[in-house]
Amino acid sequence: MIIAIDEVGDFAPTSKRYNFMIAVLLPRFKNGIAIKREQFEKWKNTIDKGRFTNQNEVKGSDLTEDELFRFTNEVIISEPKIGNIQIRIIPSENNIKVFDSFKEVETNLIALLITHSEKIDDKNGLEFYTKFSRWFKHRNFQHYMKIVLLENCIGRSVQMAMGMSILYWALGDDTDLMNLEIKIDKDFINKTGEKQYFKELLKQGFRTITETHRIPMAKELLASNHPFVTKNMLPNGMLNLAEVFNNRCDFFDSHKNFELQIADILGTIFHRVQNRNTCIDSAVAIEKALGKGQIKTHLILNPDHNKEVEIRFDNLE
Image 1: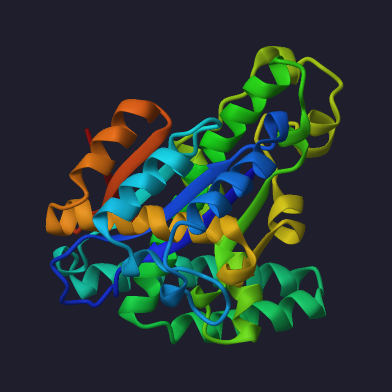
Image 2: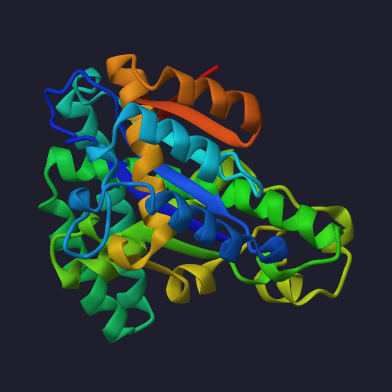
């Protein structure tokens, strides 16, 4: 299973529009990746070459409503259908002081990791988390908002991906179960050195999100001696995907990864639907075809917290 994630919107603090983090899920089941690549390339060949970038990429923002509708039918909802996760936010809904509270919680967690590294005399860990703490404290409102959305997008994406992968395993194919991969558009990071810090944040965010949104596990799978269970399940019943985040979660150039291009174009459709009230035909077709193959969440940072900072999720119809 490949999870491809892209951002949509400028995330300006004063923005009253919906800004998104979009994930698409492409299963390997029954050669699904190759089939979807072929469908995507066939659709791309219908677009005027004058609107392609120098790197042979067409951006969703440059497409007409008709081209997006054909993309919907020929790529998104054609078999195998592409599930998606939408995590959206209206930046101006959220007070900057509330973000400061969230940032303080994360900063305190990093401080605990520094303390732990000192106790066990882990010099490499101490150096890493000390630099990590300094970097994190200098994130601005806009940047941190993206981090919060990305953390939640990955948490919910992995939840859906695991459910689908277990279903395919029950049908006799464990390819997706053993090959979960997360691709994030490289435009998200500003400097090469930031990648390791983002990956650490994503691991922490994933653990937090899955505490409230548990990943489904089939009893038959847990009772088996399948390598996925022996490799990833902890004695307390929690799922440990550290290997995925360390080795199969990374930031990529979109022009080299068609999955990210699909995420970009689908994000354009949702952005136009919810901010401009256009691309309605595409939205109707997606809703009809995918049903439960979508997770739609509007994120609001709750200012009415007591001891702990909360994130309120309003599931969308």
